[in-house]
Length: 481
Image 1 (cartoon, rainbow, N blue to C red):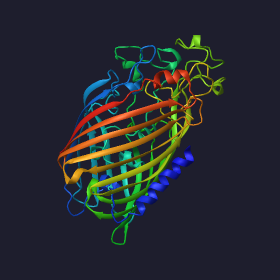
Image 2: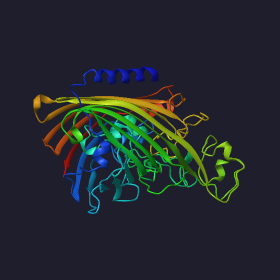
Image 3: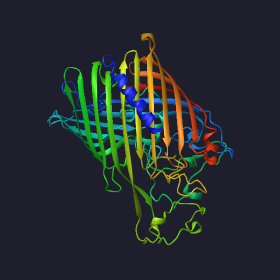
Image 4: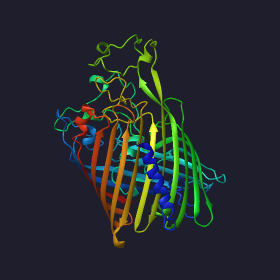
């Protein structure tokens, strides 16, 4: 299955290349990391607000439970909800009067989303300084978006869809393990489960740290080199903590990011510049999975002595830990890698883009699976997201209707989670969308997602939830200031 998908994306890329006289793509490295040297301000206040309504039409499973995929995030307490999901305010500029080659970027989040629901109502998402002194090697330091997937690297307020594709949400919007993850749980198997048929399942959101929001704290060397009249080539190399919006480091093992793109430009500027971009990226690092064995020596696993109502099939204590002495936390480190490539194209009034992503380690299985393990009873060693693999892709397009203020959008995305595992799950989504642009900075979007999910090996316990997964309606306004 993986090889045909790769061939499909490569075919799309070369098809777009054959029409390079009508092109698209924004250079997010430069737009987010630099300021125009001739027109930048010392301090420019900016931001945006997004408000939405979403309605999920999924049904409860056979025992009246609603898994997180059937509820509206980030609170996961209802299947229909109004929300101010993003309210960001920031300041950027060259505010260093002694050196115009230094610029800064600061942004904070006040909305209700995966960034702020982890114990804070306001969260700093970006705080970086860029030094533009060296030719072909700008240096950016601080907290900012790492170079990677196009869908994650682009500015969210110009995204043409309300929700991320399944593959971006599952593989790139990183979630981090809780501290003392296993031994302080109150439910069986180290999991939190929603058992409320009235959708009051707060326990479904068991992860306590904010999402990574496609960001990291570190140091990046990058630049764009223009060759000829219309071509520009960009690169980025970054070293970061690998700890998302948690500014400190929790394991000392750094994450590495590599990115390259080539772009043909024909018209426009900013986030909706017309042109064609080909891109390739890779990232790798280790994640600390926090299991606290400081109060005991592991001699065997007895679920009756760990403080929870576990079962004999609970695999959360690995056999390799038996015999370790007590006295301090025992952290297991797991390798996380992600790789992707794709292309973006626009010639008004048309737009097309496609991307393929694959990866291994720290595969997210849902906020109610904060052990990163499916823990399917009776199936030993299967469903382990800590060491599992996944892949997926999307292709999408848009058409600005007859030069009007209306746009029609269509996206098809695929996400294959835990590939090759007995508990592999395959997701596919068709998103039908329309946007109405009141002006250049204000628009209303409507999306209807037709969702399908199935167990690759027809596991009954999975199908019990997947079979009742329904479609989702989302309506959102965006106002940029």
